[in-house]
Every structure is written in C-alpha cells, then in structure tokens.
Length: 330
Image (tube, rainbow, N blue to C red):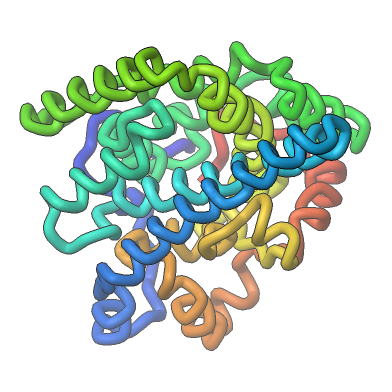
C-alpha cells in the first residue's frame, strides 16, 4: 500500500522507517555545514554563467555564423549552470546552504530562487512532501507527472522525441506549469522576504526596461531556461525516480554515477547521489560522496540499493523497465 502523508509538512524525513547503518557520530559529522563551500559554489556558478556572453557577442560581430554556433553552445552551457543554481537552491530548501536559517533563506531566494523566477520557499513546501512519500499520490512531484511524457518504459525514439521537444521549447507549456507551481511562497510566511521579493522583481523589470536589456535577457537567460534547463531537469528526474523497482526503500530512487560530460551538463554538484540524499537529507551536497562510501561498506546497501553508472545506462534501464506505476508499492 502507498504511504500516507500530509502534503503540508515541515520535515523532509521519510515516513518509512529503516535501520540506518551509518553511526550517529558519523552522520553528525557529515551533516555539518561549511558555509564557505556553499557560497563559493554559488559565486562560481554565476561567474560561469557570465563567462561566455562577451565571447558570443564578439563572435556575432565578427562572423554571424560562428556567433550563431557559439550562441547555441552558450545556451546549453548557461542552461546547465542554471540547473546548478537550482540544485544549490535545493540545498537551501533543505536548510543546507547556511546554518543561520534566516540567512539561508535570504541567500537561497536572492541568489538562487528569484533569479530563476521562482520562490525557494514554495519549492521547499512541495519538496518536503516529495521526500516524505516519494512516488505516491502524496508526492506532489509524482502527481504532476502522471502523463504520457513520464510513462515508462519508452523506446529510445520516444524518449529522444520528448527530449528534442524540450530542447526546442515545444514543451513550453509544461515548463511554465512546472515553474508556476513555485511562483509564490507558501507554508510559513516570512513577511520581510516577501517584501524583498517585491523589491527584487520590481528592480529587475525596471532595469530591463530602463537600460533596454530585454533582448540580452531573453537570449541569454530565458532561452536557456526554457530549453537546456528543461532537458537537464528531465534527464536528472528520470535518473532519480524512473525505471526503478519501487519495492523497497533502497529502490524508490537510484544513485547515478555520471561521466564527465554528464557532470558538466546534466548532473553537477553530486546531485546523482539521489538515493543517499533521500536517506539522509541532512547531509549537504559536498559530503554526499563520503556518505556514499560509508554506505557502500554495508552489505544491505550494496545488495539492495539501485545504483546505475552513467545517465546513458539510465536510458537503457528506462527502455526495459516494468511499466511506471501510478502508486508505487511499499
């Protein structure tokens, strides 16, 4: 039977109980936050987003064809970096960015959520429910995807067609609905953050209008967001919750080992360790590899956990899996 959970919840701990093999002292150590690492990654991703733009503009002036090729590459690169910002926002949603919760939410919104035109706190409100009861009717993420695009198994051609539509922004309505559910903060209100959100968006739209930056904003921010970011989110989500057995807590999701290209463009910042994250959401992203090594020491985890090497192998599994259930058995 599916797990029952309340949609509005202030905890990201799973409903299903299990015997943790990680000693409490080790878990406390792995859960310790290192704020400088989080902020360094935020700064790095913003620098990587800005880096290709001057080169693309210069190439456009010199050679329109070369500039067009460079622009396509920049769209993929910026979309991948937007995905990295979304992953860091996910850290803030779990209160894993900074130890002070007010600062965590301030930077999580200002540097990560609002630039993606969503509210990190709205994401948290729904995401915690996902953690409580993954792949069930009580999981808002799962219920959002009860449609043909998310039904597996698929042939390679069918999956390629869906991804191509993502890349060409032909799934724009789907993307707008996805972002729309995070458009405003829900759950516990923080009036000061709501006021700052209004200041942020008024300042953003006013600046774009006053300095006539609409076209660069559309070309270098909105287009990547509606194309490659959508591809990366889909591939990462497929790797997290599709083509698995759903018959055990260690097979409600998978951990995926990405190759170098996949780490750059699809699964940065250790996001592939998704099973490990579901088991221990208190562990920040930079400690997930060590947590995974600790879990691999235990026979039960090695024998039961669903682990896949590369997202290409995830695609192979999703073309040969059992049909995706509407409610996963537990």
